[in-house]
Length: 81
Image: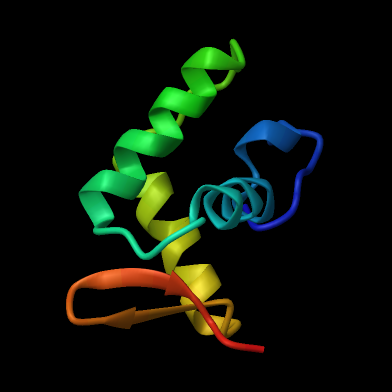
């Protein structure tokens, strides 16, 4: 689930999706705006493996747990390093 396996394609692994989310966060965004941005990017790139909203939230949870993102006043932003 977090890492790709023989049953989970790399495009659907939570680490891959988390990396894409970090790439989308050029500025603080709301959850819905980040979701729209990820879907737009995946659509432009012709990604074969689309993800659902639940998988998106799991990737956000993973990023929050490892300290890569913060939530402040309803906006998600990259954590200061």
